[in-house]
Image (cartoon, rainbow, N blue to C red; front, side, top):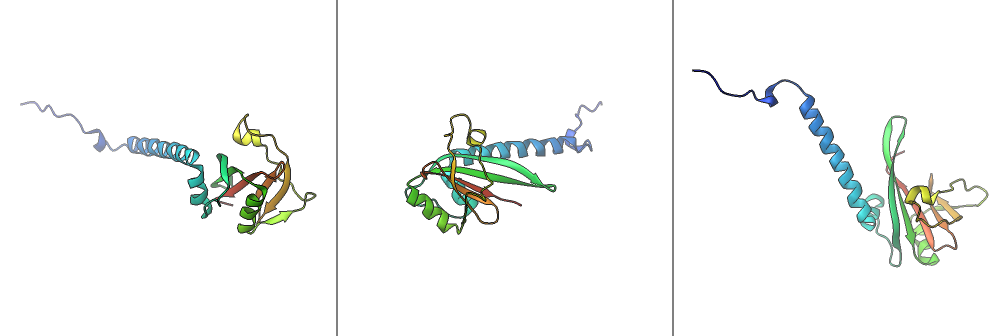
Length: 152
């Protein structure tokens, strides 16, 4: 009698199907995470920075960039926050950021490059840092660009 069984591809010995499955799942997870945090920007702020946004501050926009430094990958998150100048300054003070004199400020964010063509085109009025540029008040002080890097 002839055997009619078909070979089992999972026992073929080739690691390629398993590797491709892993890569595919990783890509789906990455895209899903970006979609989730992009549509839940206030939750992303709490998740990545460890603190909630104070009352009176809203997220106008959020984006994340993938970066690498000496073969280490990390992400830099940007939130464009709106609120009263007093509430935004309170957030900066609660993060223990040091004000940078305008003469030393070197961080000139390009809002349209970060958030797209509809982003407000505002100049930096005051910068703040704690080791690296982390925030800057924009325009008349009613916008705050907040940066958080989960790496170097």
